[in-house]
Amino acid sequence: MSRKGNCYDNACIESFHSIIKKELIHHQNYKTRNEAMFSIVEYILTFYNSKIAHSTLNYMSPIAFKKKYATK
Image (cartoon, rainbow, N blue to C red):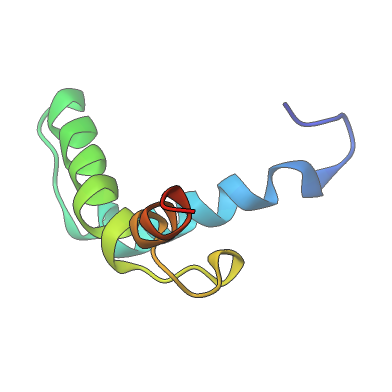
């Protein structure tokens, strides 16, 4: 939860939301909330977590990072 008057508390999640909006939401027309929710979850599971390299994870995808460090 963000502290009152501190805009940096939510920077990480705001960045994540921005990526999803640019990459997915602004290119789709959803008829229902459930359709939108399914599309977003599918995007996160099949693309964002498996294909996108994250600088905080040494430029690996979250799934690759988890596999690498789960074996240690």
